[in-house]
Each structure stands twice: as C-alpha cells, then as structure tokens.
Image 1 (cartoon, helix red, strand yellow):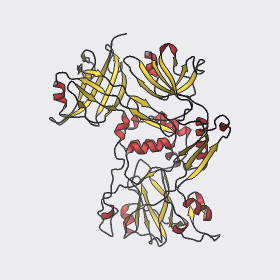
Image 2: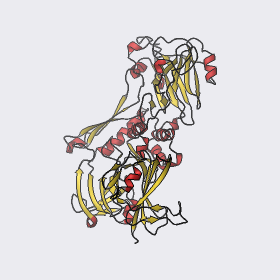
Image 3: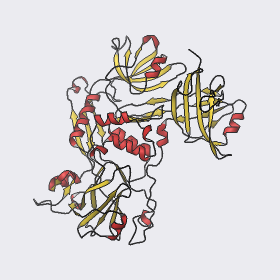
Image 4: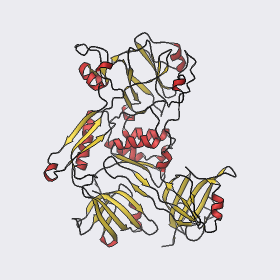
Length: 533
C-alpha cells in the first residue's frame, strides 16, 4: 500500500480582498494535484499536525439520538507566518472538507471524504499552532427557521402585516396538521387572520373554522389578497385564501364572540409524515434536494407513515425543529461525511452484519449499560402522548350548551358535543403499551414516557408497542476500542449492524449489535465504538 495522506480544504473570507478563498493543507510532505485534476496544480501545504477525528453518536438512550462531537484540526505554525496570513480571514460557518487516500491516488475519486461540513467559528491562534474546530452539516442548521416577520405597516382598513404590536414578530408556518390552532389577527378592521406563510410546493388548507368551538359556515374561497381585502364574507361565515404563493389567510364576516380557531393542514396526507416534514424543513432552510437522503426519507415513511401535528408560531432554529420531528419518530438526524443529510429510525439490530469485531484486534471492551435504555432496568410500560390540540379550551371558553343533546360544539376528527368538549379541554392524549411479565425478572422495571407528534390514535398505539418491544428487553450498550482493517473502516458507520465476538459475557457465539456511536482514526485504524443490542 502506498503512503496515505490527509488533505484538508478550508474556505475562508479574505477581508483584505473581499473574496472567498480555499486554503489547502496536508500532513507529511507537501502535495500537489496533477495538471489534469481540478483545480490544476493546486498545492497542499504540509502544516497538518492532527486531523481531529470527530465522533458521531446516533443513539444514547430513548429520546436522545444524534450528537456530533467535533475534533480539532491542528495546523503547525512554528514561524508564525501562517497565523499572520490567516488572522485576517473569516472562517465561521464556512466549508471544511477532509479527505484521506494514497499519495498516488487520483483526486478526488481515489480519496475517501472524512468530513464535509462547516466550521463552528474562528480558529484559535496559539504560539506554534492554529486550531480549527469543524462540525458536521448539523452546525449549518443552527440558524433561525423563520426569517419572515410582520412589517406592522398596515394603513387601516387595508393591509395584512398588522400594526405596531405585530411589527418584528415572526410569521406562522404550518408544516403538517395544525388542529384547532389560533391564527394571527393581522387586520382588525376587516377581521383578516394569517394562518401560514407559503412553504414548499403545496398550499395550506383550512377544513373548519370555529367561534368558541361552534362551527362557522365556509364561504367561497378567495383568489387573491386583493379579492380578500375587497370582498367581505357574509355575517357568520369565513372565507379562505390559500395558495403556494400568498400562503393562507382567513377573513371573517363578523366579529367572533370568543376565540376563533381553525383546523389547518399542509398539502395532502402523504405530505404530512415525519419524513416529509423533516425533508420540507431542510428544503425551506435552503438545502439542495440532492443533499437530502431520498432513501432515508423513503425508509422512514415506510416505517412510520402516519400524519403528524406540526406548526411553528414562535422564534426557533432549523436544527431545533429538525430534532423535534426526528425525535418524535424515534429517530436521529445528521449530516454525513459526504455532505448528505440523513435521518434514521433507531431499531433493533437485524439483517446481515457488515463486519465482525473480535478479540484479536480488540484493545478493550466493556458493557457500559447492561440494560440498553439508560435506566436501571428494562421498560414494562411505555406511554406516548399524541394528538396535539393547539388551543386548549375549557368549558368556560366554549359556546353552546353541554347539557343539550344538540350541543353545537365541535372538534377535529368529527367530534361533537361532550366528545368535542373533552378533546378541546386537553393539549394531548395518551396511549400505553404494557408488559407486566418484564417485572418478573426486573422488580425495578421502569415506565418510559415519550411524546410524539403523531395525530392518529391507532398509529400512536403502534408506535408505543414498537417502543416497548425495543426497550422492554435486556440489551447491552457495549463500548469497544478496536483496531479496524481498511475494509472495516470503509463499511462501519453509525447505525450499521455488526457482530461483536468475545469469550466473556456470552459473546462467544457472536452478538448482533447496532453501532450507536463511532470515532475512527483513519490514519491508524484505532476506533472507539458504542454498540447496542
């Protein structure tokens, strides 16, 4: 095998020239690309002391999934000349790419991409070295989700931007279902409410509008904002403007007696799954479609095709909402070394293992968690909160007459009367999955409480059953320090299935496990792994 080399490419903004440049470094001796490679004859300067291998964990315990622990890329600067150059560059949020391969390999196809991500901030400048802190693509999502804000410049009776009290407030985004939501009043003169900005290629629709829980009559849909501003609904009615350009608005024909709520939904049922909402958030955040794993989205859709409740009304960040959606599905998300955003539902190890990790190449091994759920014992009971109601309304906030058989109060799902009032009075509902036999062996068996965005009771029950099957049995979280072969390095990634074989702890026949966390030193092959199963 030829000598391996690490190539590091860092984008920086040169404040002196006002241009972005790609700075190139390597370990060992200097390296230059061939005239036929791109960019032709590019020079990699030999300043890399430590490539800073990062650690990726996709599962720690139920509800705690993906986490990236960045390494530190250390450049040698004994003379101080490199620091004198780089001190005038801005690096925060810019690209860093690390590749490893044989010196004689073709670039870039002959190299393995170790990380394709961004820099968290500026490097640290020490006396004889410069330290960069890369992160994976998740760092690029640590930015505000909603940049559209109300201008607050209505000239009443016209306008849909509110007045001073709304100025600067973020606009709502409906990304799936938003049952019994309270829309934002943006024009007090014409009783115009804002439901959602446009996001994606589909429109947000309104299936019901209620005043104090009592349904209003839907009038003809508007075709434009001008149409909505000009033509009022009849008294007791509401009319909707809904398209993929203007977003969604509702105008009332008369002032409501109490809280005006409505049921909103993005697109069709197939648009409202965990996977599709996760993908839509990335697209809205500016991620290219080809940088999102279609296979992962399809796999999660197949595993959990249920509709979800999801809308955003307050300040938040892209990474926070991506995590909310993924966690609700028992999943984690990362940006991988190839620059692709991935989402994977955590599941029991199954299928054909990609490698066997065994004693001859094992440096150390221990069972960090003999239960596998981060608690004292397996779970005998799983509770899942589901079916969010976006506006809780007790009886005192509702109209109608709860003692009457013709009580007009209604709620999502066709609920009427007492059933509607019961639904409107609470924020979420609960399903449980229980296996009392777990307590036979484990007297301290635990209750696992989860919250999901799932909107349907049957789907929520299936999810609870699946989580009990996952965490209601003994599983190990085993920590390994292992010397991997080049072939193993190429296939071991977070989430893959391996066989762990050792003479202790009944691992002698080989235990099938899923890789929950990994840190690979691609230079030496020394690897730290957390394996679960």
